[in-house]
Image 1: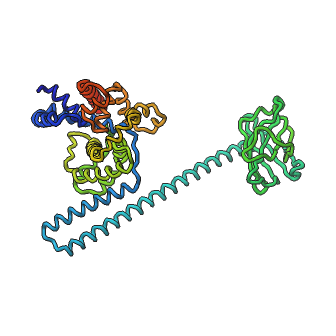
Image 2: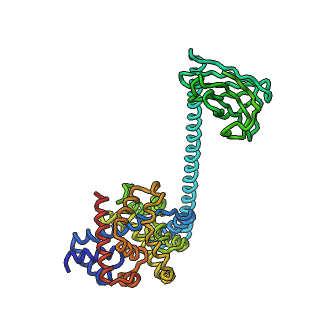
Image 3: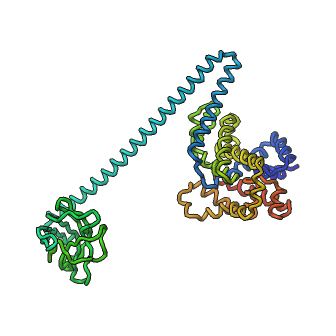
Length: 262
Length: 187
């Protein structure tokens, strides 16, 4: 038989599809032929590609403990087997086995505690990262607010309380060059959990009000920053209504809480 | 073909149970998927997975890194156990009665290749699927029937209604192409 023929047999053998005679002749030949031995091993590895292409599926967790238990028993049986062949006293054997299991259990507990510790630290790190991001965001917002308040071109607009909240008021700091505004509200009644306050911009160039954002009032106060404002000359008025939680496309009522014209 | 990872089998061969557990964590999903594919039901697959890992534990000393990768060694043991179980429980006769299901299962690689889950697959798996998808359909079907169902050349010929010589040629050509792709991965 030629090397090419053995190569073809090796291809089939890797799939378990060579006949018994073919497999046997390949084994005999490969023992003395490095090229065919390499071909056989390469085909065997190539066949495993069929398995490697499958989507992995995690087995149920209890299978892991069954496997580990079975292997541990096997390891223990080896120890017992070796010792019994050496004629070790069964009492010592039992003690050794108990000690082994106790040590194993202690190790398992140690690993679990360490894993739990790592999990807790990871959770803590995640929380700190989130807090850091929040603080950074707050810092950026405060910087923007400070810039708005201190800028030479900043305009202020006063909004006054309406029938729904006569004592409420708001002050708008408008920074035309950055198309940004910061609005400070005071004496607004706290909104119910299923409601949001919504700030509307009434523009000279558009027939319908444009939402500038939603906010909640806490202890009568609230602050909202508006970005990408229309240019100041287009703002005719600003008003606040109470809407369903999350805001609406257009105001659903005329019960303004504060209102101010530019 | 495989990504570079620390070899665990030498430690397992020395009786290192921690290395064995790591080996399980690293490869159990691959082997379980293979056994599910071969046996078709989770109970059998879980039982054989356990047997296979115990065999890995007892046979780790026979692993020769010069003959193939660690995962190839494990796959070979799991596949061999799976095919033994398939034969001993005569599951094959049940599966043969379900010819329609066979076709859809056999074609699973191609269907998954273009699925939305590609984003989460490893580069290696993508490459393997690419290689398998490049095989002509008749060659791939013949390889899969042999590999996943343990069918002999004549059984495959009977199943597909093709001459034995045709099946043999398809399998040899398919394997040669896979071997070439494997060499390309390695290089």
